[in-house]
Length: 208
Image 1 (tube, helix red, strand yellow):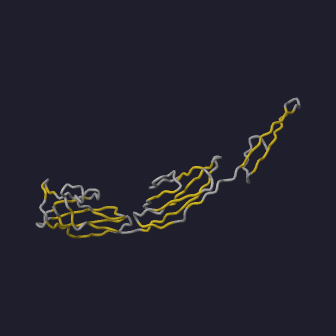
Image 2: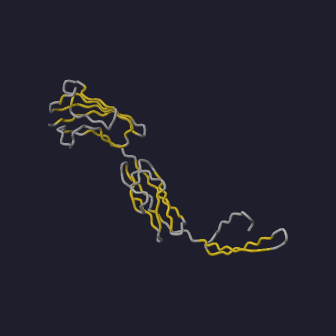
Image 3: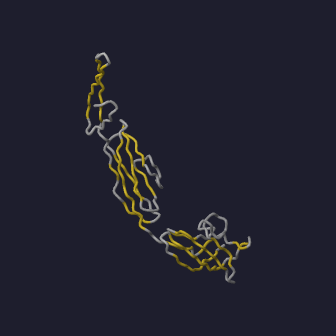
């Protein structure tokens, strides 16, 4: 080997190297170094999986050796240091796991999770805004919703609620006054993440 030359071992084993130094007067001295090259740890990951939108995928990795696991890209992973965990990807995702053994050697494996696009849009047929914490507001529900505009009308045709934020639901009031039980008409304009647009109309019963 030459001074400062990098050495990349191609196989495991124990190798001894001797270096001889010569000074300007021709005097020599030597030193030896032993290099131990360990095998890479074995590692396998689970099989590729297909889930539906909002589904949960099981991620698993296994090694016969003792060491630590690290899921390198922790998109929606419940535990990125667990050998077995779950994830909820919103799009096709390749998850890579690293395993580090007791010698500090690393191996990598990957698993592909394919997400099957599911369109689901709906509004409940009834809700009960009575303050009990159960079904107290009327929300737009669905998968892969990019944008919405939700309007609700009473039996007189008055618009009692409007929102473009699916996180905000109608609490059954209009001008800060509780509305009487009855049937309310709604119109929903939506855009999905794949670009599809549409309009839904329906009725919901307010129950107190």
